[in-house]
Image 1 (cartoon, rainbow, N blue to C red):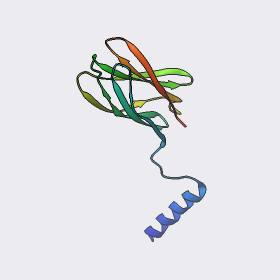
Image 2 (cartoon, rainbow, N blue to C red):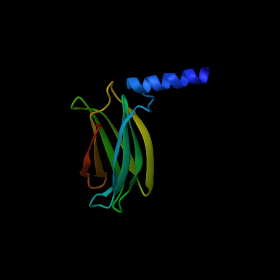
Image 3 (cartoon, rainbow, N blue to C red):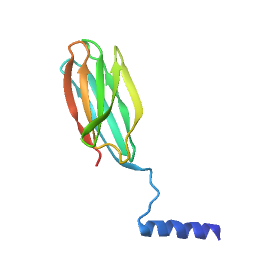
Length: 128
């Protein structure tokens, strides 16, 4: 009896459009991208109602430390910023950035050479 009630409830939720989901709106990212100084980064991002999760890596350049910077935008303004730096290494990262109700609009990603202060914008990644 319990099993059939559970099946009926799940079917009803499906008919009403109320699903059981992981709350992940979408996943997006970028493959390995390098600057002219030889520093590289790659990452995958997923967005939920109140956060963004970023997983990837940054590799230092031969000329010194390399930083990948993530700017989290909500309502057209920077809500927060996170950086990850590699110095003579390939550094992996995996973090979740908490955000406002409704989540982030997009994440802007920069690759920075710490010695020359050279910045390149890798791109803007929207929460679709």
